[in-house]
Figure (spheres, rainbow, N blue to C red):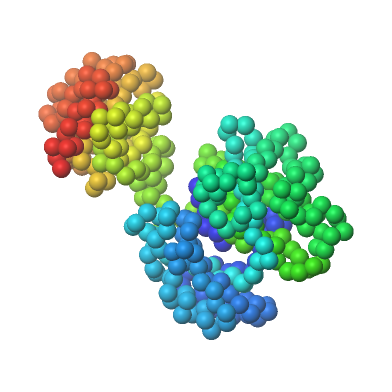
Length: 401
């Protein structure tokens, strides 16, 4: 699950991590009022930020500097309601329905910082670079030596030696008597950030840029941006995080699938897939690609799905207008083939079958399942194997275009 920048900064602030003052807004009028509130607190210049779940907002025109309070309104009118296109949104872009009005805090220096759930190492790893504001993926490709990776042992958590390595790599003074004691600030900053990451079951946390503002003794380390993703499986124990979900930023089909406990991810192809088991689902997508097709989705109905669950899964696939053929690929172990057949028949009769449907069944109660499909009177293309099914689905898709 993803959240907006202003929500990430609220979590940072609650954890004791320094962020600029800012107010989320849901209209231009609220943006103007927010600027007034911040001005009353002594803020002179402002940043008007589009709030969408995508990076590259500044390059797309979704982040503007307002040098005065009066400049906020025209800039808010420009951004609010615009379709913001970035390298992460795709060409269709995203409609801006939320703004974040924040105090402008010109950085003296920008750096990059992130925490990730490092599955290879079995721990949380911290990634850092002195090259803040850049695309970290591009930097990793062109100058990997400029990125530091610090694995953190989960049994000990963030330690002082981590801070010393990070401070040294970023080129900050290790002398506690240096102006602003940035080394001490960074240790406190990271200690709180790591604790929050673990406590909230985050999967990704990114600050780009992590900035130094102010001069001399007034120097301060602060998070000028914030991105957090959470482990969906842990949301039940974090109702405060779950309440931050913005349905407007989520795929409607994925939200519907979540209601039925279906593992579903929308893709860009035109062959809908319904499979039981994540490994088989991945293999199904691969073999569709192998034979010249493109999967429209990842859909794992699970091992213990009911006919009702299968019916809803099928309905989700058929709602996708991109889908020109459907491939149901079931290997019945715990999942019984007749249950799949029952769900597919019920869904097809309910929503109608407007595209070719290829079904491959194998495993528990396979004979019964195949018999049900044959006697259903539906125009179902039977497949003898996964390879046969993929080829038939690709052929049917191409003939239907």
